[in-house]
Image (cartoon, rainbow, N blue to C red; front, side):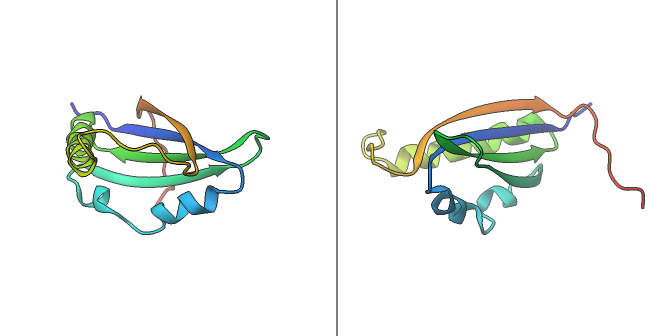
Length: 111
């Protein structure tokens, strides 16, 4: 039995630069074309004095679909960087943390 899963990438963003990062998620990208993809949500949190946070949440029919997308993305990323290393810059993202969750219950409106 397949179990839906949710991947949540929490991004720490320099104060005042959140909109710069949000622009990257304004329009659908290739993740939306992958088999097993259900939905993406982008959540914004600005009540921390040190930094802002964005939560990029994707829901998948099964973890195997997420892993297929992630492997494809990592391959593309490694080929686009010089010698497999990305250069450090002073961009808006301070760091990130990826968490994976099993979707145990999901309640939807009655139709």
